[in-house]
Each structure stands twice: as C-alpha cells, then as structure tokens.
Amino acid sequence: MSLRQTLIDSHQPSSTSRDPSAQKPLDAVAEALERMRFGVIQLTVHDGRLVQLDVTERRRFA
Image (cartoon, rainbow, N blue to C red; front, side, top):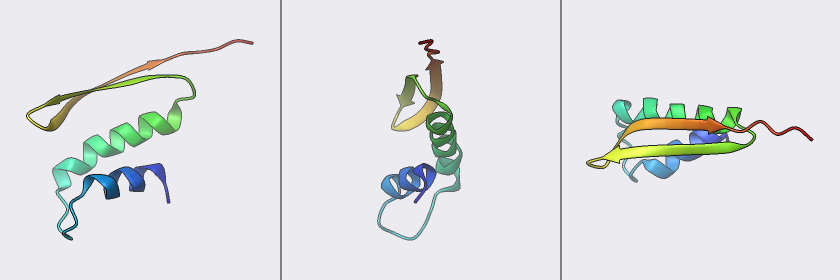
C-alpha cells in the first residue's frame, strides 16, 4: 500500500463516501513525504481543515 493510500484511508471515516475536497490536500502531503529525505513538513489547520503546507528540506553532505 502506498503512503498516499495510507493517508487517505486513515483520514476517511468508515463510511464509503469520500469527500473529493479532502483528496487534494492529502495528495500534497503524501507527495511532500515521498520526495523528502531530510526536513520538516508543517501543516496549518483552521476549523479542522488543512489550509497550508510548508516544506523545509534539508540537504546533508557527508
């Protein structure tokens, strides 16, 4: 199971109806996690809805 599907499944209530407006923010979070090796993802939530996603990526040189 992909990270994106895991996020979607954990976010959805047990009913079979899926809110299409919730899909886009979850896709953005999953994409950020898949691309990142080191860094921080900060989510801003207002009234129970994700309104902002900030990604700070770190580049490490050995």
